[in-house]
Length: 96
Ligand SMILES: [Zn+2]
Image (cartoon, rainbow, N blue to C red; front, side, top):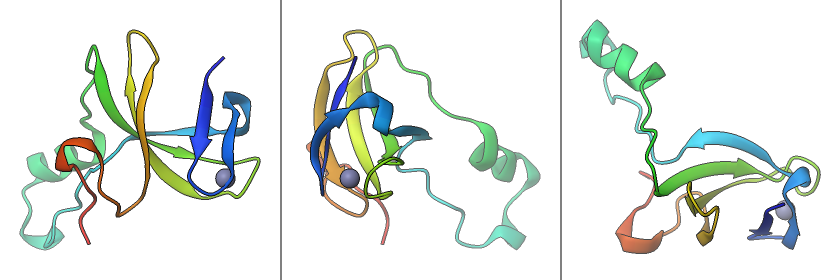
């Protein structure tokens, strides 16, 4: 079982959390000017890497806040946990 370190509550068992998919997905700034292909890409296409992956998690049975986790999809080792809008490892961050 994973132990996830909620930025607000501290370490908790994985069962308290919900997975929210890939992190750092940026909504097109002008949807009306976005092609159908680009819009479908934004809505549905996600990476599925073997290894390091930035993901969103929610502490559903705790503070109910969302945050980002960088996790290795092979070893399940969590490299970093940071708040939405915060600075992740390697300079990854959410748009303002
Ligand atoms: Zn929490």
